[in-house]
Image (cartoon, rainbow, N blue to C red):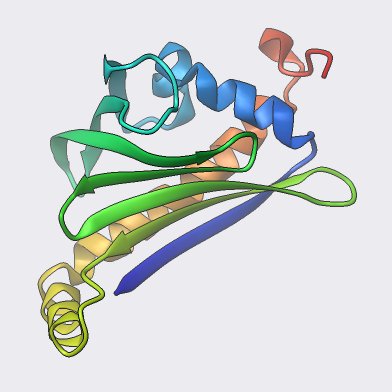
Length: 159
């Protein structure tokens, strides 16, 4: 399985980052210039079974993606699945002076033998796209840090 991982230190407690994620449709377009919009399709919060639609530009093309929440650990992690072979996770880890926000994307399957072959084929087929996705993912982390650490828009609301 191919794993793309980007972590960013944010000088805020995990609960503040979590509250921002809970209201993601309200500010999704501010998170990254390539984000066009997102909305809840089923449910209205990060709970298992909820579904969200994202529209964004990746590698020069507009994509409409659907994510189903598969697991939640309050103020710590959100697991989601886009479609077979593509899933992800947002993690928030408390540090001594703030939090580490990590976005993880998994591409491929974990089936023995077939998984390795699938990873090789996907890696070759998606080579440039995986690099673009990793760059986008890192930019999201840095943008989130800038948004949340900014005093603009009540980013430092009481916790």
